Length: 252
Image (cartoon, rainbow, N blue to C red; front, side, top):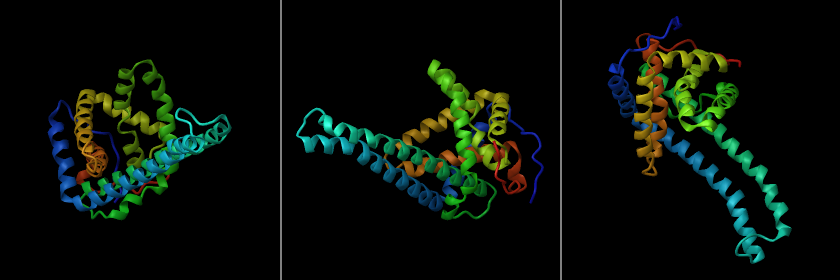
């Protein structure tokens, strides 16, 4: 079913806070089996990648010290070999970030289905392949915009990050390009900045606390995808009519 996108209906004040919070956890509890499986799969991928990066980086350094009998640093003869591992570690780190984008996007698309009452499955975690090239472009563009504010002072970077908090959800749900998604997110958030700021901080602190329990990441990861889906569907009134048109591959 194709719906007219129209203009976002951003709520005033803080009335939406409780509604968004309640609906986020209801969607999680209504489908907890799927969310736990998706969260566990993502957690396993990140864990495996972290172990590989550690083995290639710190592990190689420790092995070199043991092999040379040094207690402080490896011998000069092994330094070139260790430096040669650096690009491999960087590439693996970038692949880990890309995997994170892909899996989070899959969770978000799963959440969009759940918000509309559609059946969700574990395999929906892997449904965002079409969006991956554009997500990489969007992340690079957003990073270039945010790097200077963050370098100048943390607070301006944090504030600007809040303005862009809906960029990826808009990209995935409205078939916008990267620049359009950032602009649309900024336009929406500025209409009630304090609502989005407080809600994001509360959810961030809560999810952070859940993640501190170790395996709690399995719960925290899905929640980070569910609450933006709740916000997007409400402000565009998609929750009353069905999913927006199937996404096409956006450009930059």
